[in-house]
Image (cartoon, rainbow, N blue to C red; front, side, top):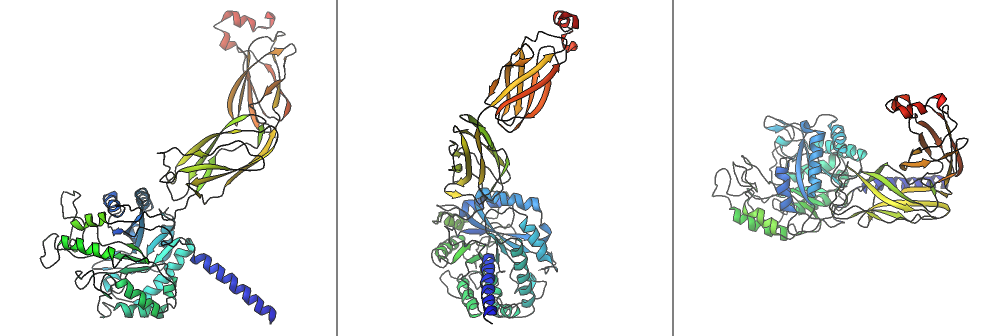
Length: 570
């Protein structure tokens, strides 16, 4: 029994550690400087991302949020990757809301196994930040949003399966619930009261709320989307507080960061003027009050009001952009009000990764020499190199450090994911002995996530060359010989003198790496060149090119030289 209990103990520890490793793969957005300001957009284009960035990253802000919808028929890898690249350049964090496709006046339910299709598609995208925020559908307590009939059990099971598939693909998926309409009446199967819907979710999959990484709230100012910003409780811009209390009653044990992905007021201005609604100037005051009071809470990670731009009914009275058929950038006053609100310079965690695609520090070097080294790195991470923090290639001291300095990416040079950059630097070898160099890439003070590069080798005595050759039919070997050397360190040329017998003096070739293969080509005027490939070593190396053959064709226009090539001329 004692051993069984011990085994159970260690199994529990192991299981807990395994579970925790999955849970905490994501990063807490509130553990780093976070800019909660955001906006809901419709189009995945620069026409919306540009004004969105100007809105949420203004007045000291950086890395604000955008909520955007992806429909199941729009899983276009190239389109969405380019959009994510655009968000990365503009420092915008996407909150992706999954959607199926409309059918008549309602949205279809997900098909069986669609969670796998979403996981495959979303995992193949290079997201702008470590956290991949995904909202699992929308307001399922409305029949129009869930196959024309509300079904809390089916939605909860779909949510559970989608969480599992996303997490199995990548622990960086930050999975969020569908926001509920907290003000809808209980009239099944068309509408479900939000409280009853949450109760049935808890029954359908016990512990489902603890599987979430954050909580999505649609904290609209009801009734009629025109309620006071000072109102409290359910159906107000503080609905998120009411929802968290309900979740606690239903067994939630985690402290979930809150994402208010939909909120905002209807205003009088639109395709037609509605005097029953508050004016855009009044809405400006409302937003200022909301951001400085109701949403000024350290549990709120993002607030993305609905909606930046919508030029048609039914959302023209929610839009931040004025109805303008000429598509000029003209916004209602509350856009500028939010622009002027003080914001935080967000610093979300990004994956800094690199892959060495070409180059090396040679494992065998000559003592007392200086080498020009080129290392080509590919950006395989999420960040843009040199975008804010300067990128550096930093040597770490080894056993016998080559004299190498830190190499910085020049100011103004930015390397996006997928692009390559070549670091050029010099290393100075000591006189003798082993060496080891460890290189790390740093963005500012932060070391890259990819493994450091380690190069080790030995400093050796130089290579000595002895050249042997002869000329066809000739005893006198005097003349100009050129030795071309091609290898890892590039090309070089040396003048060679052959003595009687066709042998050169010993040549110290300090530019040749010991123990590496090189190609050697010996040339002499009006003779065909001879090439040999040979791995050379420290000390004496004999290069025997044999007999060079006369090139009569090259000499035919020079009769004097042509005659010298003939057998009887020597």
